[in-house]
Length: 257
Length: 205
Image (cartoon, each protein chain N blue to C red):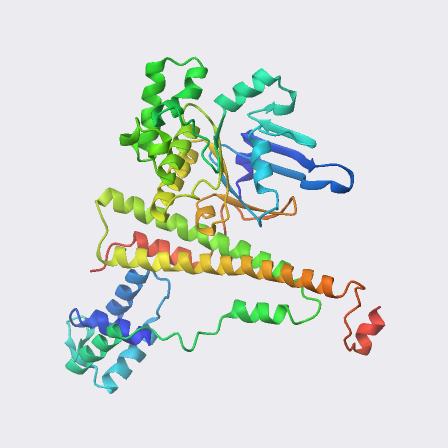
């Protein structure tokens, strides 16, 4: 279970406060989300699972300020997104939130490194500093040598890693990812998850939508959505079993040859 | 059986005594299948009876060593050369539970599925943490070998199995939903299922 002392002392990076989202009107009304309450804390990696149509992607677009809730509030680092002007919202999205889209959303006319630099330059960071940060982010996801390639000259997996590097650059403390490992083979997918994991261990918060149990397992907490409601979640620390204790002991045991 | 052949495999690397066999077996499997020393001695007794191992003296501390025989080596090779049979799948408690849940009236099948899913994801999280740690150790040491590699493979097998179970649970839910839709479509009048009730059940209504 989560250490509640930690929770009491710490402000969540992301708070979905009784958030609902209704699409359409009258008879065509669809409740995509119903009064979802979810807090993501610094250092926490949360995975969202659920059948298709359960509201996973809606949850993520609301958390990223790409859509507005029909009810409730979305609070990022203490700021309620609904109360911000368009300009301030754009700024929060650029500075505080890294978003990895399912279909990458790279700008085809820019190279990999330029795609990643763009938000930093908009923030007023010098071109040289932005390029240095972008190169570091590319190195972090393991494709530093592809900095000057254009998206069209890269594989889907490589483009996805550029998109992830773009989400990680700067001081962003909230990373949102929609099936970030979809286009990646299993080893590369794991490498990307390890990057997200490391970011959270360094104090960022991340929320990832996935249907892959093996990938969700990298998270501290897995929440389950069904018909727009949060129906269940795993603890941050599970009270698993003798097996794990035994296994851990044997890992730490000096090697028997 | 796996303990029998596991012990033969260890003895193939040289004579060993019971407690040592237990320690080495568990080191390779991350103590996923703990052995008690009694099981080890019982198994050694059967192996000796079948002529696959022979006693090989004692050390000054009184440890009784065993060595593999030529017949034992042949048996071990045959084990490695033969696939593990899948013709008689081991009884799976979860499969049995779900098979019962969908046929016994009044069971909340979705509740059963979700409770299992949460549990299995939690196990998967634990395995993944252990794996991340093993891999970090690998990176620090510049590679894994021997018992660590064996343990990593066992751990990944647990990961794949838990994943397969969760996928199957997802699939069960989809199938149940489809089944319900078909039933509703076939019987729009929503006729209550006829079943015999005991007096006690009727009395409760």
